[in-house]
Amino acid sequence: MKFLWSSTFSVFAIGLIGLISGYGIANARAQTHIASVLASIHPIRLQNDKYSLVNPLVAYETPETTTLKEYAALKDATQRIIDDHRDEINRISVYYRNLNTGDWIGINQNDTYYPASLLKVPVMIALFHEAETNPSIMQSRIVYKTISSGDVFDMPSSLVPGTSYSYEDLLKHMITDSDNGATYTLLDHIDQATLDEVYTDLGITKPDPSDTAAYQISTRTYALFFRILYNATYLTPEYSQKALELLARTTYNDGLVAGIPVGTTVVHKYGEHVVSTDRKKVQGLELHDCGIVFHPKQHYLLCVMTQTKTPESAPLILSAISKEVYDSVSAH
Image (tube, rainbow, N blue to C red):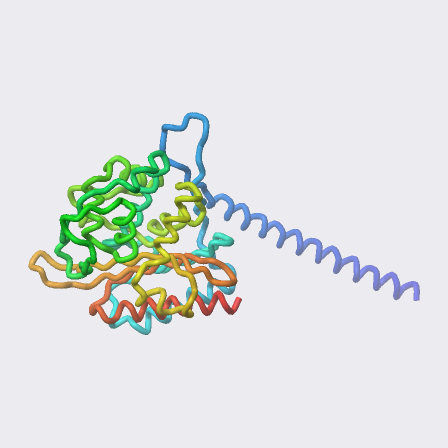
Protein backbone atom coordinates (compact mmCIF):
# COMPACT_ATOMS: atom_id res chain seq x y z
CA MET A 1 0.00 0.00 0.00
CA LYS A 2 2.86 2.28 0.83
CA PHE A 3 4.45 1.43 -2.51
CA LEU A 4 1.15 2.06 -4.30
CA TRP A 5 0.71 5.44 -2.64
CA SER A 6 4.27 6.36 -3.42
CA SER A 7 3.89 5.32 -7.05
CA THR A 8 0.62 7.16 -7.34
CA PHE A 9 2.13 10.26 -5.83
CA SER A 10 5.07 10.01 -8.22
CA VAL A 11 2.77 9.72 -11.22
CA PHE A 12 0.69 12.64 -9.91
CA ALA A 13 3.80 14.71 -9.30
CA ILE A 14 5.15 14.00 -12.78
CA GLY A 15 1.77 14.87 -14.26
CA LEU A 16 1.58 18.06 -12.21
CA ILE A 17 5.06 19.07 -13.28
CA GLY A 18 4.10 18.39 -16.89
CA LEU A 19 0.91 20.36 -16.49
CA ILE A 20 2.76 23.27 -14.95
CA SER A 21 5.41 23.09 -17.64
CA GLY A 22 2.73 22.93 -20.32
CA TYR A 23 0.90 25.82 -18.73
CA GLY A 24 4.15 27.75 -18.56
CA ILE A 25 4.78 27.18 -22.26
CA ALA A 26 1.18 28.01 -23.17
CA ASN A 27 1.26 31.04 -20.92
CA ALA A 28 4.50 32.19 -22.49
CA ARG A 29 2.97 31.81 -25.95
CA ALA A 30 -0.11 33.70 -24.84
CA GLN A 31 2.04 36.48 -23.41
CA THR A 32 4.02 36.62 -26.65
CA HIS A 33 0.78 36.83 -28.64
CA ILE A 34 -0.59 39.54 -26.35
CA ALA A 35 2.66 41.48 -26.59
CA SER A 36 2.52 41.21 -30.37
CA VAL A 37 -1.07 42.48 -30.45
CA LEU A 38 -0.32 45.35 -28.08
CA ALA A 39 2.68 46.36 -30.15
CA SER A 40 0.45 46.67 -33.22
CA ILE A 41 -2.06 48.93 -31.46
CA HIS A 42 -1.35 52.60 -31.91
CA PRO A 43 -3.30 55.79 -31.28
CA ILE A 44 -4.49 58.20 -33.94
CA ARG A 45 -3.93 61.63 -32.49
CA LEU A 46 -5.05 65.01 -33.77
CA GLN A 47 -2.48 66.19 -36.30
CA ASN A 48 -2.68 69.82 -35.30
CA ASP A 49 0.05 71.94 -33.74
CA LYS A 50 -2.22 74.64 -32.32
CA TYR A 51 -2.41 72.79 -28.99
CA SER A 52 0.81 73.09 -26.99
CA LEU A 53 -0.11 71.25 -23.80
CA VAL A 54 -2.52 68.54 -24.91
CA ASN A 55 -2.32 65.72 -27.41
CA PRO A 56 -5.94 64.89 -28.33
CA LEU A 57 -6.76 61.24 -28.99
CA VAL A 58 -9.03 60.61 -31.99
CA ALA A 59 -9.12 56.80 -32.21
CA TYR A 60 -7.05 53.66 -31.93
CA GLU A 61 -5.80 51.51 -34.79
CA THR A 62 -5.87 47.82 -33.90
CA PRO A 63 -4.91 44.63 -35.77
CA GLU A 64 -7.52 42.70 -37.69
CA THR A 65 -9.49 40.22 -35.59
CA THR A 66 -9.08 36.83 -37.23
CA THR A 67 -8.30 34.65 -34.19
CA LEU A 68 -11.84 34.69 -32.81
CA LYS A 69 -14.10 32.07 -34.39
CA GLU A 70 -17.09 34.35 -34.96
CA TYR A 71 -15.06 36.91 -36.91
CA ALA A 72 -13.27 34.29 -38.98
CA ALA A 73 -16.66 32.76 -39.83
CA LEU A 74 -18.10 36.16 -40.77
CA LYS A 75 -15.16 36.94 -43.03
CA ASP A 76 -15.50 33.54 -44.74
CA ALA A 77 -19.25 34.03 -45.23
CA THR A 78 -18.70 37.50 -46.69
CA GLN A 79 -16.06 36.15 -49.04
CA ARG A 80 -18.49 33.47 -50.24
CA ILE A 81 -21.02 36.16 -51.15
CA ILE A 82 -18.34 37.95 -53.15
CA ASP A 83 -17.31 34.70 -54.85
CA ASP A 84 -20.92 33.96 -55.77
CA HIS A 85 -21.08 37.32 -57.61
CA ARG A 86 -17.57 37.21 -59.07
CA ASP A 87 -18.82 37.48 -62.67
CA GLU A 88 -20.57 40.75 -61.82
CA ILE A 89 -17.76 42.36 -59.83
CA ASN A 90 -14.66 44.18 -61.02
CA ARG A 91 -13.53 45.08 -57.51
CA ILE A 92 -14.97 45.09 -53.99
CA SER A 93 -13.79 46.04 -50.50
CA VAL A 94 -15.41 45.43 -47.12
CA TYR A 95 -14.61 46.84 -43.69
CA TYR A 96 -16.56 45.77 -40.59
CA ARG A 97 -15.89 47.03 -37.07
CA ASN A 98 -17.52 46.17 -33.74
CA LEU A 99 -17.88 49.60 -32.16
CA ASN A 100 -18.25 48.12 -28.67
CA THR A 101 -14.94 46.25 -28.68
CA GLY A 102 -12.92 47.64 -31.59
CA ASP A 103 -12.63 44.19 -33.22
CA TRP A 104 -12.65 44.38 -37.01
CA ILE A 105 -12.26 42.36 -40.18
CA GLY A 106 -11.66 43.43 -43.75
CA ILE A 107 -11.54 42.22 -47.32
CA ASN A 108 -9.38 44.37 -49.60
CA GLN A 109 -9.92 47.11 -47.01
CA ASN A 110 -6.92 49.15 -48.17
CA ASP A 111 -7.90 49.27 -51.87
CA THR A 112 -8.98 52.74 -52.98
CA TYR A 113 -12.05 53.96 -54.88
CA TYR A 114 -13.58 57.22 -56.08
CA PRO A 115 -15.69 58.29 -53.08
CA ALA A 116 -18.08 60.61 -54.95
CA SER A 117 -20.89 61.67 -52.58
CA LEU A 118 -19.20 60.01 -49.61
CA LEU A 119 -17.11 63.20 -49.41
CA LYS A 120 -20.21 65.10 -48.31
CA VAL A 121 -19.59 63.73 -44.80
CA PRO A 122 -16.27 65.56 -44.25
CA VAL A 123 -17.91 68.70 -45.68
CA MET A 124 -20.60 68.37 -43.00
CA ILE A 125 -17.96 67.78 -40.33
CA ALA A 126 -16.09 70.93 -41.43
CA LEU A 127 -19.27 73.03 -41.25
CA PHE A 128 -20.16 71.77 -37.79
CA HIS A 129 -16.55 72.28 -36.71
CA GLU A 130 -16.84 75.92 -37.73
CA ALA A 131 -20.23 76.18 -36.01
CA GLU A 132 -18.66 75.13 -32.71
CA THR A 133 -16.98 78.54 -32.49
CA ASN A 134 -19.48 80.44 -34.63
CA PRO A 135 -22.96 78.93 -34.10
CA SER A 136 -24.72 81.72 -36.00
CA ILE A 137 -23.20 80.57 -39.28
CA MET A 138 -25.80 77.80 -39.51
CA GLN A 139 -28.55 80.41 -39.87
CA SER A 140 -26.66 82.54 -42.38
CA ARG A 141 -28.35 82.52 -45.78
CA ILE A 142 -26.78 81.99 -49.18
CA VAL A 143 -28.27 81.79 -52.67
CA TYR A 144 -28.75 78.32 -54.08
CA LYS A 145 -27.32 77.69 -57.52
CA THR A 146 -27.92 74.68 -59.70
CA ILE A 147 -24.41 73.42 -60.19
CA SER A 148 -24.39 70.07 -61.95
CA SER A 149 -21.40 67.79 -61.63
CA GLY A 150 -22.30 66.28 -64.98
CA ASP A 151 -22.59 62.92 -63.23
CA VAL A 152 -25.35 60.59 -64.41
CA PHE A 153 -26.15 60.04 -60.73
CA ASP A 154 -27.10 63.68 -60.05
CA MET A 155 -30.26 63.60 -57.94
CA PRO A 156 -33.21 65.91 -58.67
CA SER A 157 -33.42 68.76 -56.19
CA SER A 158 -36.41 70.32 -54.45
CA LEU A 159 -34.43 73.53 -53.91
CA VAL A 160 -35.11 76.55 -56.13
CA PRO A 161 -32.21 78.25 -57.94
CA GLY A 162 -31.89 81.93 -57.05
CA THR A 163 -33.54 81.39 -53.66
CA SER A 164 -31.58 81.90 -50.45
CA TYR A 165 -31.37 79.12 -47.90
CA SER A 166 -29.67 78.81 -44.54
CA TYR A 167 -26.48 76.80 -44.19
CA GLU A 168 -28.52 74.46 -41.99
CA ASP A 169 -31.12 73.82 -44.73
CA LEU A 170 -28.48 73.29 -47.42
CA LEU A 171 -26.58 70.93 -45.13
CA LYS A 172 -29.74 68.91 -44.51
CA HIS A 173 -30.40 68.51 -48.26
CA MET A 174 -26.75 67.72 -48.96
CA ILE A 175 -26.81 64.77 -46.53
CA THR A 176 -30.35 63.43 -46.58
CA ASP A 177 -31.02 63.86 -50.32
CA SER A 178 -27.39 63.86 -51.52
CA ASP A 179 -28.18 67.15 -53.27
CA ASN A 180 -25.14 68.10 -55.36
CA GLY A 181 -26.35 71.66 -55.88
CA ALA A 182 -26.51 72.17 -52.11
CA THR A 183 -23.01 70.72 -51.80
CA TYR A 184 -21.45 72.98 -54.43
CA THR A 185 -23.28 76.02 -53.07
CA LEU A 186 -21.84 75.33 -49.63
CA LEU A 187 -18.39 74.66 -51.04
CA ASP A 188 -18.49 78.08 -52.71
CA HIS A 189 -18.76 79.65 -49.26
CA ILE A 190 -16.95 77.32 -46.90
CA ASP A 191 -13.42 78.19 -45.89
CA GLN A 192 -11.22 75.73 -47.80
CA ALA A 193 -8.70 75.77 -44.95
CA THR A 194 -11.41 74.56 -42.57
CA LEU A 195 -12.28 71.67 -44.87
CA ASP A 196 -8.61 70.78 -45.43
CA GLU A 197 -8.11 70.77 -41.66
CA VAL A 198 -10.61 67.93 -41.22
CA TYR A 199 -8.40 65.69 -43.35
CA THR A 200 -5.05 66.84 -41.97
CA ASP A 201 -6.27 66.66 -38.36
CA LEU A 202 -7.11 62.99 -38.90
CA GLY A 203 -3.97 62.20 -40.87
CA ILE A 204 -5.97 61.50 -44.04
CA THR A 205 -4.70 62.61 -47.44
CA LYS A 206 -6.89 65.51 -48.55
CA PRO A 207 -8.43 65.94 -52.02
CA ASP A 208 -6.89 68.44 -54.40
CA PRO A 209 -9.53 71.22 -54.66
CA SER A 210 -8.62 71.71 -58.33
CA ASP A 211 -9.17 68.02 -59.15
CA THR A 212 -11.42 66.39 -56.58
CA ALA A 213 -12.64 63.90 -59.21
CA ALA A 214 -9.23 62.19 -59.10
CA TYR A 215 -9.34 61.60 -55.34
CA GLN A 216 -9.58 58.04 -54.03
CA ILE A 217 -9.94 56.55 -50.54
CA SER A 218 -10.21 53.12 -48.93
CA THR A 219 -13.01 51.64 -46.81
CA ARG A 220 -10.76 51.44 -43.76
CA THR A 221 -9.65 55.07 -44.03
CA TYR A 222 -13.10 56.43 -44.85
CA ALA A 223 -14.58 54.61 -41.85
CA LEU A 224 -12.63 56.96 -39.60
CA PHE A 225 -15.08 59.78 -40.37
CA PHE A 226 -17.91 57.70 -38.90
CA ARG A 227 -15.79 56.53 -35.97
CA ILE A 228 -15.02 60.08 -34.84
CA LEU A 229 -18.69 61.00 -35.04
CA TYR A 230 -19.82 57.96 -33.06
CA ASN A 231 -17.14 58.49 -30.40
CA ALA A 232 -17.45 62.31 -30.46
CA THR A 233 -13.67 62.61 -30.54
CA TYR A 234 -13.50 65.43 -33.11
CA LEU A 235 -16.71 67.42 -32.86
CA THR A 236 -18.41 68.08 -29.55
CA PRO A 237 -21.07 65.54 -28.49
CA GLU A 238 -23.75 68.08 -29.48
CA TYR A 239 -22.55 68.43 -33.06
CA SER A 240 -21.61 64.76 -33.38
CA GLN A 241 -25.22 63.97 -32.47
CA LYS A 242 -26.52 66.46 -35.04
CA ALA A 243 -24.34 64.89 -37.73
CA LEU A 244 -25.50 61.36 -36.95
CA GLU A 245 -29.14 62.46 -36.86
CA LEU A 246 -28.81 63.84 -40.38
CA LEU A 247 -27.10 60.67 -41.60
CA ALA A 248 -29.93 58.63 -40.06
CA ARG A 249 -32.34 60.45 -42.39
CA THR A 250 -30.50 59.56 -45.59
CA THR A 251 -33.14 58.61 -48.14
CA TYR A 252 -31.11 55.95 -49.97
CA ASN A 253 -32.40 52.52 -48.90
CA ASP A 254 -31.14 50.10 -51.55
CA GLY A 255 -27.74 49.25 -50.05
CA LEU A 256 -26.93 48.51 -46.42
CA VAL A 257 -30.45 49.36 -45.26
CA ALA A 258 -32.04 46.78 -47.59
CA GLY A 259 -30.21 43.96 -45.82
CA ILE A 260 -31.43 44.58 -42.28
CA PRO A 261 -34.80 44.54 -40.51
CA VAL A 262 -37.12 47.49 -41.06
CA GLY A 263 -36.96 49.96 -38.17
CA THR A 264 -33.28 49.40 -37.37
CA THR A 265 -31.45 52.71 -36.99
CA VAL A 266 -28.75 53.14 -39.62
CA VAL A 267 -26.62 56.26 -40.05
CA HIS A 268 -24.95 56.07 -43.44
CA LYS A 269 -23.90 57.75 -46.66
CA TYR A 270 -23.71 56.34 -50.16
CA GLY A 271 -21.75 57.41 -53.21
CA GLU A 272 -21.90 56.53 -56.93
CA HIS A 273 -19.30 57.00 -59.65
CA VAL A 274 -18.88 56.02 -63.31
CA VAL A 275 -15.42 54.74 -64.19
CA SER A 276 -14.59 55.44 -67.83
CA THR A 277 -11.60 55.58 -70.16
CA ASP A 278 -10.36 58.68 -71.96
CA ARG A 279 -12.60 57.66 -74.84
CA LYS A 280 -15.59 57.75 -72.49
CA LYS A 281 -16.03 54.01 -72.58
CA VAL A 282 -17.57 52.84 -69.31
CA GLN A 283 -15.28 50.42 -67.48
CA GLY A 284 -17.39 49.99 -64.40
CA LEU A 285 -19.85 51.57 -62.02
CA GLU A 286 -18.89 52.24 -58.44
CA LEU A 287 -21.46 52.15 -55.66
CA HIS A 288 -20.43 52.55 -52.04
CA ASP A 289 -22.39 52.56 -48.81
CA CYS A 290 -20.80 53.18 -45.43
CA GLY A 291 -22.32 53.70 -42.02
CA ILE A 292 -23.20 52.54 -38.54
CA VAL A 293 -25.90 49.97 -37.77
CA PHE A 294 -27.45 50.25 -34.31
CA HIS A 295 -28.05 46.55 -33.79
CA PRO A 296 -29.84 45.73 -30.49
CA LYS A 297 -26.88 43.57 -29.40
CA GLN A 298 -24.03 45.80 -30.50
CA HIS A 299 -23.40 48.79 -32.69
CA TYR A 300 -21.18 48.15 -35.66
CA LEU A 301 -19.68 50.00 -38.60
CA LEU A 302 -19.89 48.54 -42.08
CA CYS A 303 -18.32 50.09 -45.17
CA VAL A 304 -18.60 48.41 -48.57
CA MET A 305 -17.14 49.87 -51.75
CA THR A 306 -17.83 48.20 -55.09
CA GLN A 307 -17.03 48.46 -58.77
CA THR A 308 -19.42 46.33 -60.78
CA LYS A 309 -20.14 45.77 -64.45
CA THR A 310 -23.81 46.78 -64.23
CA PRO A 311 -25.70 49.22 -61.98
CA GLU A 312 -28.16 46.49 -60.93
CA SER A 313 -25.51 44.26 -59.38
CA ALA A 314 -24.05 46.49 -56.69
CA PRO A 315 -27.18 47.13 -54.54
CA LEU A 316 -27.90 43.39 -54.41
CA ILE A 317 -24.34 42.60 -53.32
CA LEU A 318 -24.37 45.40 -50.75
CA SER A 319 -27.64 44.24 -49.23
CA ALA A 320 -26.50 40.59 -49.18
CA ILE A 321 -23.33 41.48 -47.28
CA SER A 322 -25.30 43.74 -44.94
CA LYS A 323 -27.74 40.92 -44.17
CA GLU A 324 -24.90 38.46 -43.54
CA VAL A 325 -23.28 40.83 -41.06
CA TYR A 326 -26.54 41.61 -39.28
CA ASP A 327 -27.42 37.91 -38.97
CA SER A 328 -23.93 37.09 -37.70
CA VAL A 329 -24.17 39.73 -34.98
CA SER A 330 -27.65 38.45 -34.07
CA ALA A 331 -26.33 34.89 -33.73
CA HIS A 332 -23.62 35.88 -31.30
